[in-house]
Length: 366
Figure 1 (cartoon, rainbow, N blue to C red):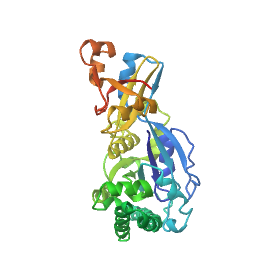
Figure 2: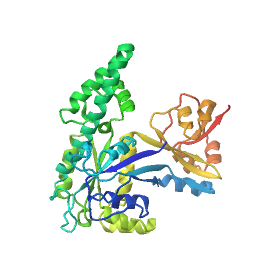
Figure 3: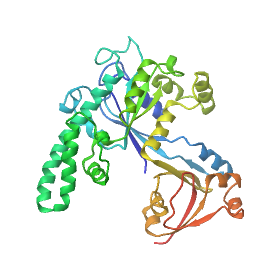
Figure 4: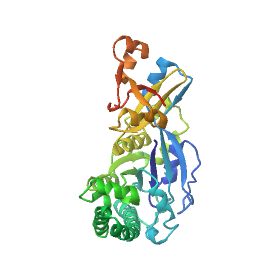
């Protein structure tokens, strides 16, 4: 499984510039006018994970494969998008396909870059986008309720889902996103899967600043953080322009540059990916052999057979057991043989809950 993130925001807030930096390729057009992005750009980006280098230094594999994130650069939304304004609600359907949303918010002043509403007000910008997403969910849910009402007459088991849909619709009509709905339960989760409610998706606000505000928060960033606190969202500060400039640097050059700018040594993009994993409850385990050292993304709490399924469905279907070495044990004992000799390799069965960083080998029979 791969983490999928949709990048949204008003026109000219830095979405496409951020996308260019994420992909380390200039394949998302960035221009100083609204709607320069007319199709959703998709890119598959490697997840930075130092543990892969540590494993590879011991195993010396032929290939190293990071876990990946799928990023979608969604064209700029404007007020009225849910009714077809701007480039219309065709782009809202692309957001429904993603696991989480990165909402890029302009937190910099620059008279040379036009703002679609004429002034810099990040909270107002956020609310414009949120309103359009809420309106899109209302339209979708109204249609879903019509179908559920018909189904519930023939199948009473559909009634709880219908009741939940009506309650969520009433909540949305109050101008509140579904993520703040007070009854977050299994019925709501089922409704989310069936209906693709956009406003139930986890949100990370990417506060886009200029280079002078990397080390400290300006008033705009502070306003975004305060807003996020009341909306179950997270905030990552980025300078999209600098991130794009760093895309051609080596790892050492990038680290030196970040430290010189007052950063903690991690780029804003790395923080976005890290927050994406955290907000969705994702972890990684590893397979390590001479042919390949690889990270595999799974949901925290998955048991060994389910975790094995991301390699191949047959691994889950014919699961026998898993050989497991904790990452630190693998490193400290210089590999599988050393860990096994030190008694650090465990045989785990179907009920084993995979931990972040486990180095695993699955035994199966189909």
